[in-house]
Picture 1: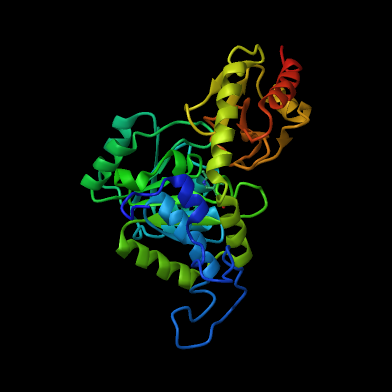
Picture 2 (picture 1 turned 180 degrees about the vertical axis):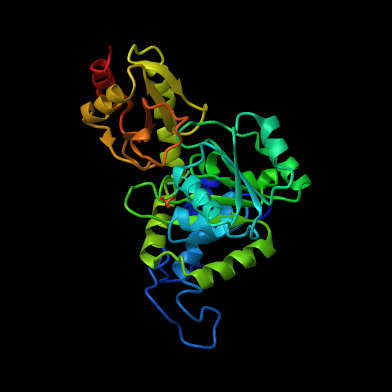
Length: 357
Ligand SMILES: *Cc1c(COP(=O)(O)O)cnc(C)c1O
């Protein structure tokens, strides 16, 4: 094998972050349960370093094309990145960002910590205008659950012109469908809870960057704020990532097939799909009541929040009071899993047939 040929993401997902191929070495990195380490080395203390985190961070960093830091949850990663903004600095963010991100921005603004400006991500000119005087431009693409897609390259150029950092929450796309660092974005944030872990059994977050100075600042923040993942959680996410490419490919194929079949169902007024990934948002023509009915009528699709697991789930997003009021009351977000697509379709169609008129 030539040492110069870059490995494909599928190979990286399977092979990165493993112990050296020495006789009797375990194939998988062990779960290192340690609050402290014998003095004299680099690890020092359990809040600063853990070999199981390192294996996960090497793997995700290699997929995103940068260095990676893992955090206790996606929101711990989001919060740590927002903390880069100096007091009073302006943050530009999509009005349809993940509701936790919006609530966090509102809380920081209420305490006078930052000034937030929420923008319509689909209006690139407006986003570019908002970049002027910004300290940080937050992008989420596609957005959760509106599924709007940002013009990342154009917005990044404008933000850098203004001297602002650009962040992309890459949770929905995963590094298999989108690598924002390659487009010049400064930071990528993940809720690894979703596709990266993929089995709905763990919470974890991550930040990736190519900028060594930013990496150092964020590592220092993590050391001091202590929003670190557990070793077992890191191991579970790494275990999940070994099949990321297979899961994302299958879930995306299922989603694309379902989008085609959903297109003219009379219970729906709208089917939103950005063309890639495995999240589909449908709007029930009869509004919130019909949407609630749909979530109660499916048998295979589980009514639950969160997304990105092997199992298909659905949820009416406006049942959360933190969701943006511009999201339709009747919008149901589908997280398409890796089950048989005909089984998924039969279950969904039967439930939808009961939500017409
Ligand atoms: C779930 C989610 C988060 C928050 O991650 P947690 O792991 O739940 O803390 C952030 N961004 C997006 C897009 C999400 O879907």
